Image (cartoon, rainbow over all chains, first blue to last red; front, side):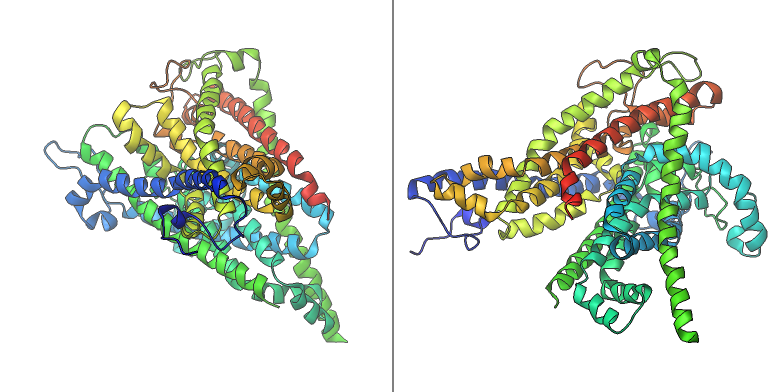
Length: 334
Length: 280
């Protein structure tokens, strides 16, 4: 029987399961489906509100500073001389975000991939359970406690036992020159590296586990060692690993409290990693509650949020797409 | 012979390196848990849990309002977030081929990883602008963080329910929606509760969105449209204090309480999900 297309058909999947039941009972099904569909739409509403509200909030700043906001280096909400206009440029924070995330990836990704590989290939299954739990605990610790630990435990340790030696060994490089501040870009990068480990290692473990056993069996049959087998697994799961890394990048870019507490919070186009800096989220966290007086100040901070929102949207969408495609390919393969 | 030994050596080295990676990841975990315990335990006593937050630099007092504030804000956030998340998850799992579901699943993943400070800005522009720094604004922000997590875990739990159980109910003449609410949900109960607890654990440690919505205060809860204290904010404020001997131990004490709350939830979650892993 042909039916005209109704509103609820849009939210239904008519070809998924055979239609069972009597005609009069369909009403309940339709209502339930419509109700859950409407509730589900909160996802679209939230995202839509975010786009609308954040763009609207930053309009004043966008109109005043235009694209110069992105490469201006002066962040002066309260100008030194009366009569001067405040100026806002986010480049130091964009630079800080870029550098800290890069450090986080450089330090965190090898460790995470090692964990992912160990858990999917080498460790006994019993052991997996405990280790996965511990790595998940690392993700459960609140970011503010990472910050506290960073300030009072990590910074003194690094300043005493790591940074001086690092400078002595690699001091000829400009990135390791200058005085050793405790709260610095490098410290923030190290804390971020620790914080992305749970994400990247969990996703890469799943990617490696999704590699079909036939691949392993084929190379083992040729007499490969465990590491040579693992190499095949890595190359098979390559695109999934890239997705995991991008997901980690998304986490590093958006991390707020821990970074705010250890990066030193100064608008500074740093060249040495031992200098203090700023990141996009930490400006917002640090200045938002005090930014009441010129309306453009709040607007500029919201525009920083807009930049962050767009960055996070692009990074996460990309990561999800890659992971989704790669696990699909891995599962569908022979 | 030489090539075999070199392959063997390389194998040993690389496999040990992956084990080393495990150890490296556990060092910060152990250090954080150990230091928080060592530095937090001396700060905690009955007075610390029950009394009002003193101004920075003033000895004595406690973090009572912060514990109260966290419980209230997280509680309201759960009241908003859990039903929305659970029903969205049910929709995504029960009607997986519907066109909006494909987009929703993708956007849900994107929302899960949205930086928390951006969600704080949403809470500010949406609510604080209208009624001021308030408990409600904080609860809404945390609910927005919670919904994608609950949606995702509910969807996965409902998907795991075998089709035969649904068919059994339908064969008895139960309408499909009733089957979903009664039979499917009760088989997926464990997974859904796990997801809810996980999301609560996640939001109770969030600081950035609260900073922009409930602002923080030193006083007891005084109404839903007033600023309130919260544990993460108290930790942040104590850690910024220049009075190292007075306020820093309080930061550690508050951290220990927060960690115990969150780890407690994580352990409960493990208890719920344990047979999923030990079965293998």
